[in-house]
Length: 115
Length: 111
Image (cartoon, rainbow over all chains, first blue to last red; front, side):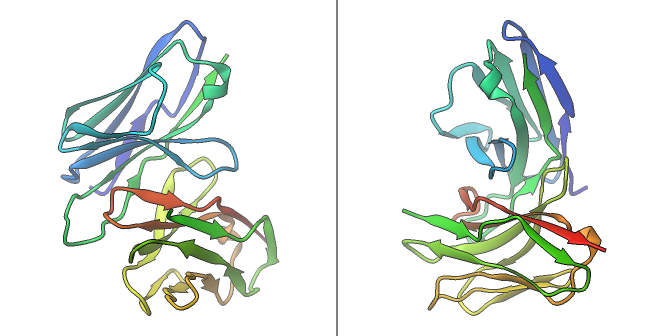
């Protein structure tokens, strides 16, 4: 199994809603990531979890709240989002091995629209 | 700081044409270099990578050589197909968990 699975594929939410994005991998990877990608732009790193601990937070607003319940799962909780938060949210994972330079495995993303 | 610069797109080619997408990088150390491809409505997929100078990454007819002297990692393919239409991202990474992506180059191949 070399997949990163994201759900839902599409999400429409109002600015007062609370929703969650989910990501799952069963490759034994110990690093998991959230990226945000606007149309025709490269992915922008939001958060990195290493060994289930938050290791990087790229100054993301608190209306985005990540959670890593275990080594296979990564969630992104959304609350009081703004229309400009509409984007493709990508989850990724990688092995953590200091002796090699590992690659990222990406999910297909959740296309989020905030109305 | 570290960064990646890609050629501006979009690029439109006829089927079987030769493809080059330029990528140059700025790095304080010796990173690994990657090309990722993103098909419409999907996440990014690793296309190829090179971990040190003079390494050549190759996959599905695509090639790129890590050139330290010119700080480049240009993507090439001898004969593109319609199915190659996608957005291509050049990226660098030191540790495998902190990637710097270029802005992406959109490729459209017409029959």
